Length: 101
Image (cartoon, rainbow, N blue to C red; front, side, top):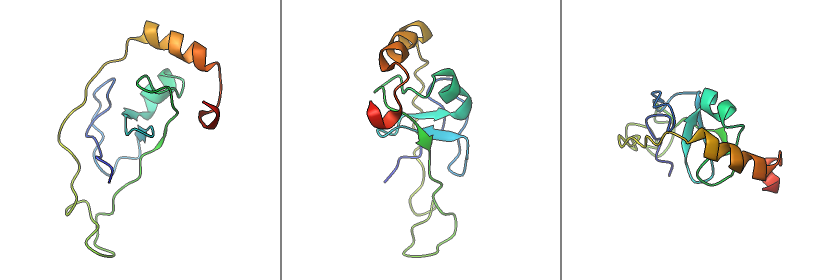
């Protein structure tokens, strides 16, 4: 189950569980949409791409699978990206779409 991290790893912008601004890579690295644009859709931690983070239901539609039963993590992962180093990674990715990385 996704951790639903509480903030952007780069800028530390709050990303509550219902946020539509949260973007994740396949390893759950979490960034806001603005930072994903800044990072050219290249995860600085793995080189993968990003996708919108799903929103966990607030209401119990089935089997108690709600954000209240399975809350988001409160542990902040704030690791501002070294943008110069990231530019080198983005250059190596060389415009490949995430499915081709």
